Image (cartoon, rainbow, N blue to C red):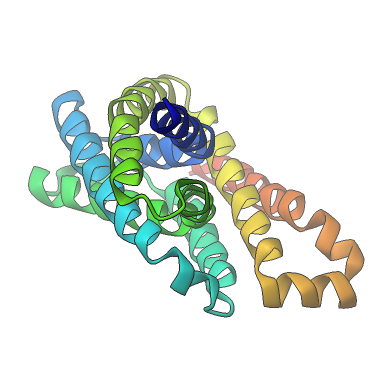
Length: 219
């Protein structure tokens, strides 16, 4: 019974902390045809889960690396802008290449966004590798199902792409603040920036997206 309760807790953590990951998966695959989109989502999700298992086992080591969350936050911010400025020009590329690019984005984004997730799971599971693997594996179909739905919405309502990029930028700001070294420095040196950084980055992304839309209409 104790293992079942622990498994449910890990599953809940996965679902709660995987919302942004589902957005990334959906945004990375939104321009693919339906069949290829499903393939990219499944392969990307499977690869992301395998990567997350490895990260969870290495959580103790990750905790000791300075600026790892800061670097992840900057990388995630770059991904937010990249997804925002993506257009349909790459649809002429071979399907395999397009799918591979989508899977690459999914894996990189999941890596940088899953640090908090894996650290929380590692602490909760108390070293029980079997529970960790089972808990993460169970979350695969749920995240994939959610990503498929979000991808359809993004295709029908392009404005949601802007919202998705803003969410990623906000998450990037939070990662920068949570970094033990950089976060502590910002809190002590630039207190106002420390409080407003996630919202500021999200706002910058929204402004950049609106500017891009205006330029596209003029052209």
